[in-house]
Length: 234
Length: 286
Image 1 (spheres, rainbow over the protein chains, first blue to last red):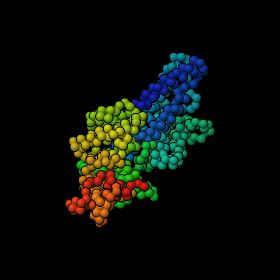
Image 2: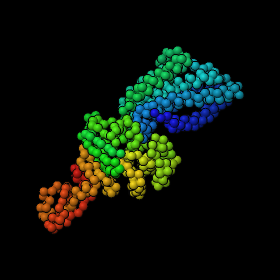
Image 3: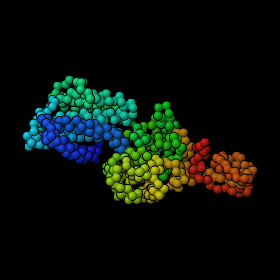
Image 4: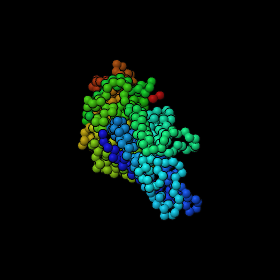
């Protein structure tokens, strides 16, 4: 099996530029709130929400864009499955590292301006300088969302409308992973506490991420292992 | 790359796209794959490229199974209109991935073709015209130098001068790097001079597999006075006929004694591959 160097490089390169743009936007928003409003919480804590949707999008693109590309270039589905798994295993901590830097830069900004840094909800970390725990929390989160994206898009790619059924287990994966890192209500417009009631701890977070990785990608493999390439442009 | 197909069946649920098709394609030839819409051409090529699993029979490439056998499929390239190999970011991006996974990729040749088709490496492929997208597919297909290279109507979006440039490039590269090439097309007359052998399928079944010159030799037009033509062709396989006043022209399929025809005061001549194709697959669409 080959290491997915170009698949990873392409995604990392794009994510890096997207993050730089997002960093600028969030910094401007932070300064705006600090100057014209009342700033007493971390803005990056809220900004993380968009990054997990980005991870979901990357997971979807892995199947809709890269699976046909790799098979059309003579790679097997098994090879692609391996490369997608390696990509997720490396891309999730990479995205998390970008968030670590974001929190450190935010901490610096708050320190320089005298604004109060606080978190709005429970996390595995309590301060922006707790780098290992921030890194762990968001690695776990990105693993869950990437896996959910890959799983759902595999189902849609294979069964089209029938892929709707895959949304339920995908949501379960996301809720389960999020529940271990303090976020009991990770989905928009749903304020009810529908997540899993799992204790927030580094160990449960790691176990949840490993479980999501193994179960999610295992189910994905069952879907793509003999999936035909579509004849028409999707 | 040699292809051996035995009793192939491809079904989509209840619909059978290919049924009981057996075929052997030898290495180092250019094949024309002809068939009407829905004849099963794309299904056949998809199976040959490992894009889909067949429902029955066996398909071997150089004696190896194809589906999920990457040692074989990495030597096979199928370029389709769907654009799997190119619809990913810019032209540069498409080449970036092709170069990585294609063992015989020729970057210098890819650049030559990009110059030939006047493509912009930095341009997003999805934002290109259909003709330009087709040209990017042609670049990836030819520069991959796969021992089995197939184009499934993927160059039809190109304008006539670009298509001619493609045919010239294909032939020149085939001469320099012989390999098995399959061209699936509806532009039969335009491409037929490239074909060494022709495979015609209809309704999922093999109709003809023959060297192109032998296929053409099987078709003749017999022209002359209507009664004499009628008499001469009575026991022959008649594909079609036209009449203008007292003169009748009949297209026949099968061996023809041209000297005998001339003795009977009739003229004989070749007929176009497209005419043969139309009649071998059931006649003109009504």
